[in-house]
Image (cartoon, rainbow, N blue to C red; front, side, top):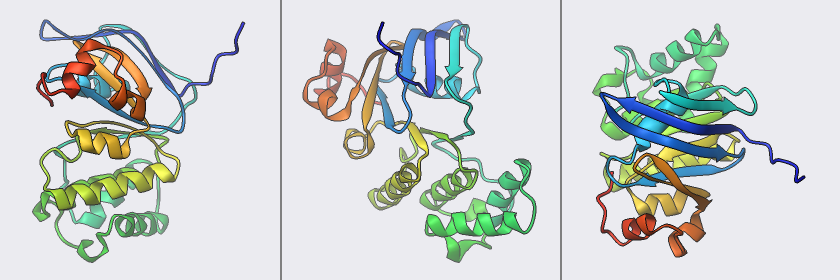
Length: 235
């Protein structure tokens, strides 16, 4: 009997029903350590619901989500929530909630801001920052916690190309330090740039989990083929 490969996160028979609508339908998905997974699919395929369920924000209606090893996790949303505090204090608060005391808290928060190129706005109120700056701040806040896995739900959906490039740079840096990335995007170019593997969702089921280059060159399912050809709406 072949030895089973270690997994980081595994969903089996996962279903989520919200408001009488089946968003995730008996989904099976296994995520291995050390990869960047981009979740693609048509509008309404269940991408955002899947991330929120894996992160624990939505309880499954049926099925299981199991962790192969315990890891700290974090999530960044398309529209990040900023506290009524400075940029530095936003990160400091997250560290405090996770039990980090002074002086380490200020040092770690400052380091996180530097990593995303926001040191010069440390004392500015977070809620007056531009959309791109707020998203980088949200990534810095998550990165400071040193998560083993980071869920990103369309982190650049409303940003211009320059801000998008900055966010992609930060995501690549976070991944390079060992954090497992699982993200959704509507941007196929971004998926090509960032993904090691693609999870393709159709009507709440993962029909493909395959290396990114293979997915774009030879998608296995007709739904994925039509999606890549532009016959299905993106989200």
